[in-house]
Length: 326
Image (cartoon, rainbow, N blue to C red):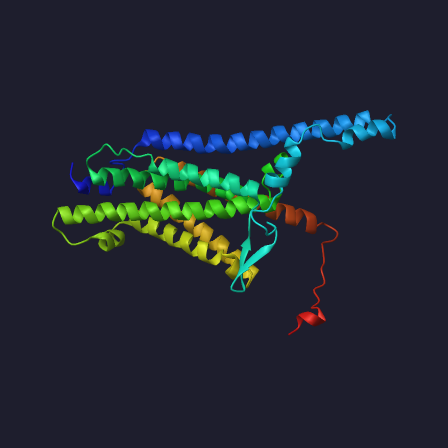
């Protein structure tokens, strides 16, 4: 098989391993959610038991609940669950050269993010290195990184919504899900870049093997399938730049609306890219876009319901503070 066969389609892509990585990613997310639900149920049960036991007890008996039965949980809360990553509190901004670089996640959040990112790296590196064909390995890497980028788009959108049902279910704040949203978004952009570079490497090898000049640019120009993938990649890269804390804090409303427009372009580009290439995971893009529109509809419905009525509507008075006028 010539190197040119690995530049398009699913040639060289291991669909079985790709499907296994999909199950592994969702299994890890569901497992984390189940552990959180169980811990919340245990904590709520202990609180209810403490409340019932203290209804008819004196101060001496109530002192029983003031002491920890074990040092394990207090140690975990002090050094892992509530501990900052370094000496800086995780909900405070840190600066580099007077530039706001955002907030650091806590140690527990960092542990979860590290495990998730390393698992994606491991999935990308799980290739058939026994193959003597270099282009076959690169084609498998191209398929794996593109596959993972598609799969990670769904939790990326779920964690971004303020109407996320996991917030009340797990009793986890929106800020925490926002941290996960940002890092998964960066992960998707990196996987999309690796997907593109892997294809470019195979294309370059194929053109050299066939004694032709590099046709990367011409292929991007002539193929709508590749062009829409490039549009999606460009939107993701721009999102990573404009979503940085230093840029985001300059004009948040501008960032927010531009972020939404770029996200739509990225998802539509990825959807058309998958549709024109008849990729098996295109359905994930359609579901992701559907979830995003559903969250938008719910949010606007709540705004209309809470602020507009038959007899009256919400009114607000905007007044600039004296010290804000510069």
